[in-house]
Amino acid sequence: MTTLDPAAGLSHGDVMDILSRLETTLASRKTADPETSYVAQLHARGLPVIARKLGEESIEAVVAALSGDRNELVGEAADVIFHLLVLLAARDITLDEVLAELARREGLSGLDEKASRTAKDT
Image 1 (cartoon, rainbow, N blue to C red):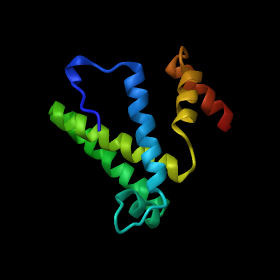
Image 2: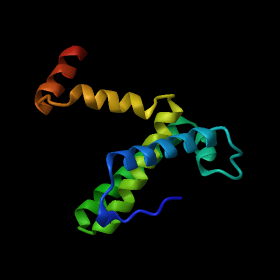
Image 3: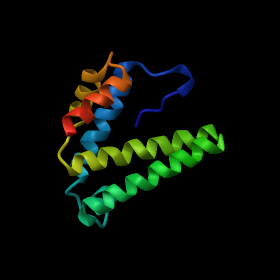
Image 4: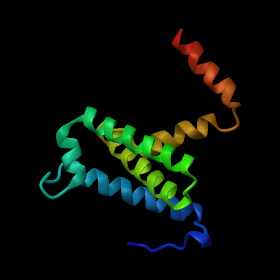
C-alpha cells in the first residue's frame, strides 16, 4: 500500500494508479469468498444492496459536508468512490467508460449538457 502525503498533492498519474489498482482489486474480489471479502459479500447480496449501500454512503458524505468536518468528509468521500466502483463493477462498467463520458462533457455548459440529456429522453 502506498502512503501519500495529502499536503504534497497527487499527480494525475498517482490518482489514476490508485483508482486503477482499486478497480482491479474490486474486480478480483467480485467472485471471492463472501466469508472473507466485504466486496464479495456485497456482490453475493445483489445489485439492490450494493445500490443502497452507495446511497447510504452518499448521505453520510452530505451530512459530513454540512457538519463542516473536513476529515470526516474526506473519509466519507472515499467511501462513496469505493462503493460507486463496486456498483460499476456489478454492472460491468469500467472506470474508463465513466472517464470517457466526463471527457465528452468537458467544455460543455452544465445547463446545456443537462438539456441535451432531457431532449434525448423526450
